[in-house]
Amino acid sequence: MNVIEDWCGELKREAGLTRTLLERLPEDKFSWRPHPKSMSLGQLALHAAGVPGGLALLLNEAVSEVSVVPLPEPTTRQELLEALEWSVSLAESKLREWGEDGLRNTWKLVSKGETILEAPRIDMVRTLMFNHVYHHRGQLTVYLRLLGIPVPGIYGPSADEQ
Image (tube, rainbow, N blue to C red; front, side):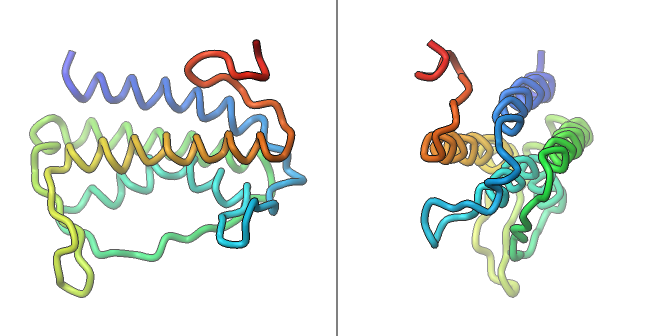
């Protein structure tokens, strides 16, 4: 196997775990936030669902301008699940389009023409497209715990599933 096949497999496996978590989110709590500086449950969930595809678009160009990340709040769980499906499909498509050679290309993030970050695309895919989702998924499990909602097992049973 090659890195593209490995990562497409990881993308699909992890999307399944994310889907399990999103399916637990109560629609009547989408506006809840644990702290005034925190995203709402709905904002965080929609952001986590959209990260793979959104970052695939950002990483697609050799040079990308820093942009403001919109943080809309969904109105239904179905909206979250559809966003996840779109996002994962787009990310997989871009991975295959880039291929291993394209992953080795340098990618730059710029702000008003000034380079903020420059690295091989492969590093940014791992950090931004994959690890970023895992980070936000972990935050979502904390939100569920604070709301008293049973947390699903992600990489094994949770305290609620033993």
